Length: 347
Length: 141
Image (tube, rainbow over all chains, first blue to last red; front, side, top):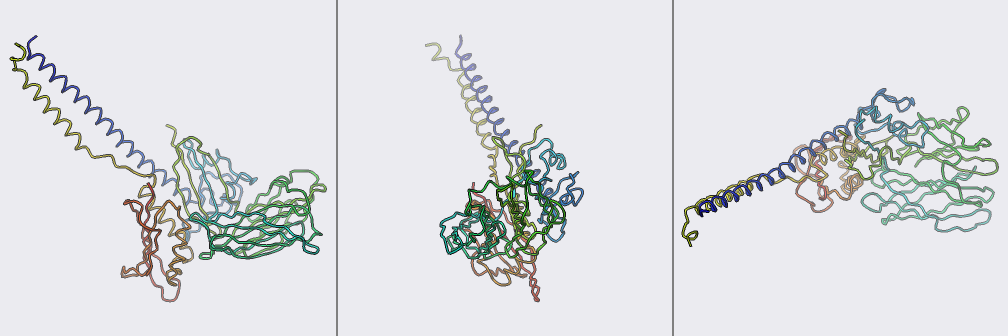
């Protein structure tokens, strides 16, 4: 074979190899570019959907308070002066404890998101942790000391505490503040004449903004056995400033109903069998609704919040891609965090 | 010996070598893929707008500025943001002169992709002062 043929063959092989390598490299780079562009487009598309869900009223505009299933989904309260103000009932109907809660399917239909997973999560701005640190007897009462820690996303917070203790027909009030380390102690006395499960409701308000007010609840035993989990005896569904009660057992007696918020406390008034009117207050605080009663001879104290927050609605996105958009929103003058999550759309 | 002496085809190999270098160097001209973090600048800008709008309900933001409550203003912004997001807030008067005499920031920027949103608010007091609030955000990669 002549040497020129070997050289030509070698030169051609080199050129073809390099051309193949370059083509493969270019294809890889271009694919990454295209994927990156698709991600940016997807993010903008999903952000616009999220914005629409937060700022639109849906159809009908009052679907939250009427208990109707919306034909289009939107969470806004329709107040044009606040773009990110959400309706108290629309939010509450995303909580699966509520008898009027929408299903994931209904929301997906109304939001026209049939080919995409949707998750809605609403949380309070402050996190409150309550632990019972001490119990002592004082004459004809028992004193309970609680350690309360308050934090926000960036760490511990100095906050004002307003606490209510509810046991059967007894309601007590205590207030204090947390230190800069976010820890405070309160002591509440409950008369020994009252027995059964008791409930401590803690409201914490940030010192720098009264719209940052959150609540926490802690059930404990007062001269009785440990209380049953919440919603064992009653289904409590607040809607349109009415508390609708579903009894889980046939032989039940409702004794008292209370509505408490940071600066306000009142008795609930029954409007008909199984319903109570929820008082409207100007207090920038969630309202906690407490019902005490008897199931045969067993006392119970159960509660719900209005708005029914915190809540997690829709898909849990386990082992799947999740596109998250976080909003700071107002519900009845109080600030909350709303997280909208979208999965990837199914082609 | 005949093969070693016959060097007529060597120029083809040299040409192919140069052609390969030319081809490979052309690849370097392709722009590098732009990384984009989970917090794109549009999302951060949208978040900044959302925070300023929500915090200014009932003129709260303007009231804090009028009272020069910079520490409270910082706390408000901080409570609305994840600790993974850096922020810097500057308040200007109507002449675009910064009026906050202390930095309202969470520290040094964590990366150079900073998104900003400007928001105009007016004091609810009798002087009706107008403020321009600029909130800059950056996410952690």
